[in-house]
Length: 439
Picture (cartoon, helix red, strand yellow):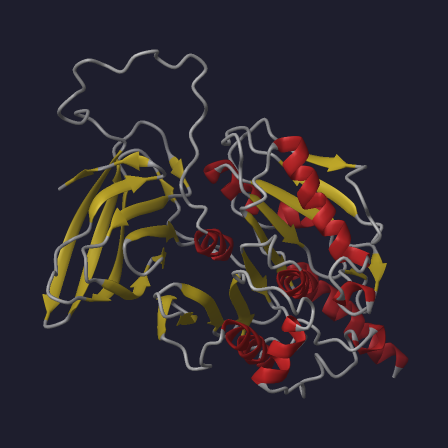
């Protein structure tokens, strides 16, 4: 029995490490991961690392990215795609390192009584201190703070959104559990009721757990994105629904989604929008996946959900003192990309194939194609790229196999959409922030 238990522990630890994903190759930047040894109140005794991209606005957004049990901040930096996305979009990334032993190594404390109280101590207070430090030292925007993480980090994501709804604007929890799922340290994996496969509370009970943290809070709650593999047995897939029940209750929404789609093969997404049409909750069921998230492209979907996918531009050191007296009336004759669209429409539906050609002189390694979807069109599924959001200004992110485009090379992606009469092709294409020609 002891040997079997040790083998299970070892397997779980390997799975937790696998949950870091394989990151795409990053371009050469001067920025590097920096450790901060004194960042403020640190009752959790945690380590802090931060990634500050070379190109960023004066007040960049802050993303807190948290590892799984047995991992570390530097490990999650190396094994996930958030730093490369920070290079592209100009936000700061904080990588905390958990130091408390539980279950499969060092994990984020989501079980102790102190961790379940706002400003009660332990890891949540340490993480909040890191966010404040990023604001003081690097000008990080305290009104644009986001949380994400894998496994133990996914659990802490939901935890921080419950404790500090006035600090975090949104979160993306990979393989997490609802807030207050763990009764105490003994309940933490590999044993216990929370992840034992039998956890089942009512939506009201889950929602009450969040509300009782700060009964007087009346502000806007942070939006949340939830991810889980259907074959995950370490943190059972059934806990995805428990998280859905918690957060729909917190938002006062029905547990029945307002829409569902498949952004890319194997990604089944449910969405819950409020009365204004704002999507407050997304839940992704990744078909056939075990305890192995986030995988390629998922970090980009999380960053898009946060609303951080506007590429940053380097500051101009010597801006012109007066605007041009005769601004150009036509765009430049050349562009680094060309997009050709082919639309096949019927009744209230259509499919669109977009052929992207690299017309520049340099290879493209990793791309995002932004475009305006005509009014009344809503994407319901796609292939060869992931798409977010489903309407308006949409960003298509490359799949794992088509992210590289040599000069002159092309790739074709596509989507299916509904429409209310306007079945035209998308417009205003931009590849990695650079406008594209059409035709």
